[in-house]
Length: 243
Length: 243
Image (tube, rainbow over all chains, first blue to last red; front, side, top):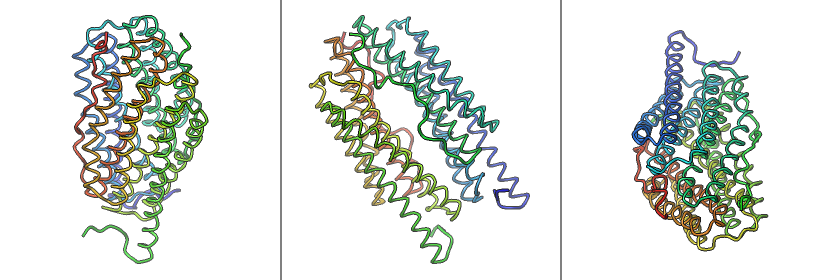
């Protein structure tokens, strides 16, 4: 068995309390990040500025939690001097907090674009594709957080290997948006913002994949091969496919 | 004085060797990231596909170094059980490696877009703005890495507080690109890619700012207020300003 912590029941009890507290903060961050994403996308699809404002203001709570996780993690390492599996768990906590904080930023960025788009009518034909991409991304994030809570490596690997579906959806949406820009120049402004909203969703998927890698590392101590299956070819699209 | 490491000259010597090795890896990562950014932007402005390919392939080395930093940092924490300032330095090293790895990814993403743009003529009027933004971003990154090497908090704070100039340049470039799209639909494809290239440069600036925050934390133990002066309003631009 790996030596994982200083011996002594009192030490173990307070150490476990530290780990539990860190886990609770991560779960709270994940709930806030998922909520922010959901609200930001509702605000985008419904043109709801008040909801967008709410997302922007609420992002601060996610940032505060991330600092809290870092402080507690560093404090725990300093106090308890954990090794092996426990050290991995604490390092993993910091990494996951970092990804969740970025997801909060991406949701906030979508919310800011809602305010920019303002009263312009949404390009309705795009709504369905955006909603589908969002639903898929939130599924991935929910699943990987379940994998974290349940220490379920099978689940984390499933998330890790299915990011390519998100990439493919993003590439299709990129093409769709360029088509609308080409068809009607009045769509250019709004579609430029939607290009970034779609990209933000795809990035949330990447962060879910990062979290899957971290959960796998936390459970097994192994680092997944850095090249996972990719299907996002939007950055390599012929820019004139539609002309 | 803070208790910073286990006592004993041999232990101290090997501990210092670990820190030096980590610092050397960070410096190597920074040199590779700066080089990648420079080459990716030259490839973009000159339409040089071979150079772009070089950047894409070379990104692997930055990823490998990041994993190396993480492994060594975690190994050092486990072996040496550092506290206070030394623990901060190791945590800082992991954070900076994370930012540099992301900068490498952003350079790679620009390189991929060079291949997508292919033989289409660059919108020449945009080149100057892109070059200016790149030069500014690379200055920030060079300065913050100097701050890291010299443990110069004054320098890190200077980087931290001047990110708003990059944000303002990015916002202006965003407007410029939309204007070209509106003027001539044949520019839409290439300009969509350039929107993302500009955004990638702005994100490199954000990572330089993150590194500045980390260097400040490493030196002082303090966390900078999370709300720094921002001037990137591109996500809040009226999408129809030009119509």
